[in-house]
Every structure is written in structure tokens, then in C-alpha cells.
Length: 277
Image (tube, rainbow, N blue to C red; front, side, top):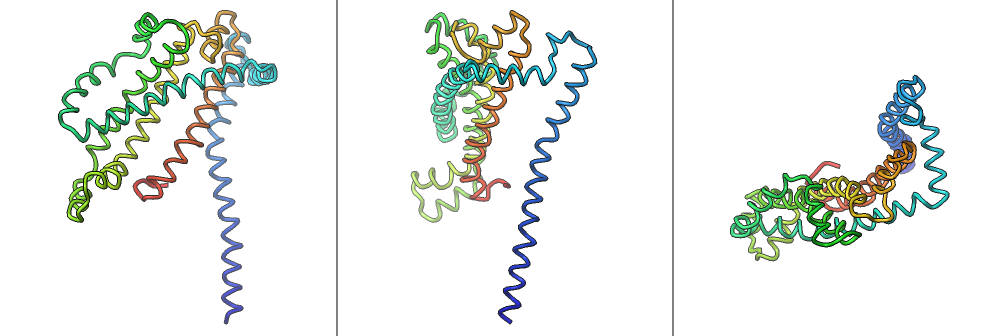
């Protein structure tokens, strides 16, 4: 009887392993398929001659430029400078945005004070603030970082505030009935309940930070940065260099999503069963 059970267990394990491997490969294929389609369409348009080759290069030309700039150290240098500005500004947005959003959700007085200001400032395009920040704080990294933090804080504030307000009343009443004080109420009910919204706000804030940073790097007269590279290549019609810079932005964004946000989500709200894996 024991041998039969062992045989069944081994059979289930061996049959389950290929199933998991097949599911992994199917997931990879689903993720890669859109890029294959876009790449094929790009090559068709490039080889059809609808645009001049200098304005619409083939993927081979873009890959060659990407490799040449990477080996020369130019592209990594631009990427590192942009990433430092991005993470510095986004860290400010995360700290102040989450703090203000939670405070607005927990205090009616704070909501009455901050909500009108945030509602007025948030719809204004980020680049509209750029001249003011450059006049107030001068050219260079400092003004760029402050502008990125200021602009990207608004989605974080709104989503954090919404998350706190959206915490289910039954959770709060259950915690109160079990004698939870304010500190335990916040750490065990309010913050976990609002965390899915906060993570969404951080994702939106990061996208906002990318948009304003790439554009402001040229205005702020910084010597290095992916925005500076893209705008500089535009002047000389180096479309392949522009696309290489865009590819780096996409790769950094993908890495931050998979290695940071998704990991945080898996270790928190997914493990707690608040969102589906």
C-alpha cells in the first residue's frame, strides 16, 4: 500500500512539473507575442520605403546603434544620469505623496486643506511648471529632481487618499470590536486595505515622472541624460539613436515594474489575498 502511494505521488509530481513548465512557456510566449507583431509591422513599413531610411530605420540599424552606443559607454552614462534623477524625484513623490494622501484620508481637516490645492495643481501639465522651477532653482539636476517629485506626487496623493477612504467599514468595526487602538488600526487595517491603491498611485506617478523628466532634461541644460540624448539626436535626424534611447527607457520601466512593484505586490497584497496573483 505504501509503495502504491509513493508511486502515485511520484507520478503526480512528474506530471505536474511539465505542466508548470508548459504554463511558464505559454506565459512567456504571451508576453513576447505583441513585441513580435510590432517588430514585423515595423520591418514591413521600413522595407516598404514609406519613409526615408534616415527617419524610419530598420530594427537591425537600431540594434547596431544600440550596441555601438552601449559598448562606447555613452548609452549607460545617459541612462545612469537619468535614473538617478528619476529615482531621487520619485522618492520625494512617494514619501510626500503617500503621507499627504493618508493624512487626507484620515483627517477631514487635512482633506479640506489639501484637496482644493491638489485638485487645482494636478490637471496642469508638468512642463507648464518647468519654467517656474528653472527660474526659482536654476538650471541643472536640483530643479529637475524637484520638478519630477512635484509633478509625480499628484497621482500618488489621489490614489493614497482614495485607498484610505475605500477601506471597508466592516474591517474597521471588526478591529474596533476586538479592542484595536489607533496604531494597530492603522498598521493592521487601514494601511493594508489602502495598499493596492497606493501601489497603483506609485505606478502612475512613475509614468508621470518619466514623461516630465525626459522632456525637462533638455530644458534644464543638463549635460547627460536620455532626454538630452533623444532631443540632441533629433537635431541631426539620428532616428536610430533616438530609438535606442527610447528602448532604454522602456527597459528601465519594465525592470522597475517586474523587480520592484511586482515584488512588493506579491509580498504584500497578493499574499494577503487582497488581489489575485
